[in-house]
Length: 241
Image 1 (cartoon, helix red, strand yellow):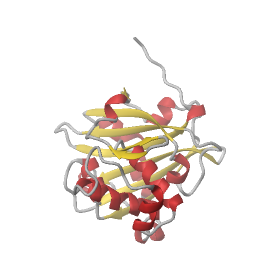
Image 2 (tube, rainbow, N blue to C red):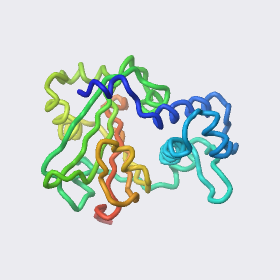
Image 3 (cartoon, helix red, strand yellow):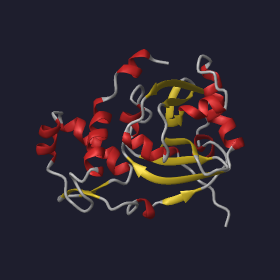
Image 4 (spheres, rainbow, N blue to C red):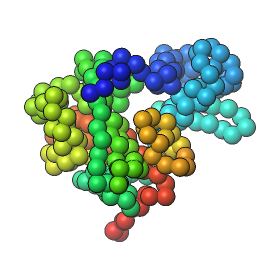
């Protein structure tokens, strides 16, 4: 577990959290237009580049919609998500939908108090959340990335020893799919893969397929909520109709 990652949150993620809270508390209500990037970046005290990364994540999560040449607007709840495609599988998305198969996975994780957006994502209260980063590599070159959130209660319930990261990795890559009651996935297009992956650029281009995934137990509780990023040129899905 990286010490620096525990104490230092990426600036664009902090801005995302602040804007998320302002949207929830009605500062920017559904249907309203956000201030211009120039005004909003000045108000948030960050560069326009940092703000654009934050806005890209809000767009990715279906909270904000960009209208080219007009501006950014707050979406009504679930408006954007209903336009996306639902994918179902009981196998890890990187292994299911990527034409390149990883031969190595690098894991990093940290434990933090949850933000409001994470609590809303997990749809439950938890005093702490384990946040994991996974970079998938072929011949030691990263080509895909996964970000996952796990409530701390799950770590205790599954008896995952965080002093042995391989146990956490094995649960995320295999066991959670074997023991889940159900899984819900949404596939959409995004440009945020490289800066979300942070430690490594996973593609020369900024076109990615994003698979947002929730894994549920038999009581309908979310055990793991993940975002999986696959470069568009490597994405493939097979359908049997």
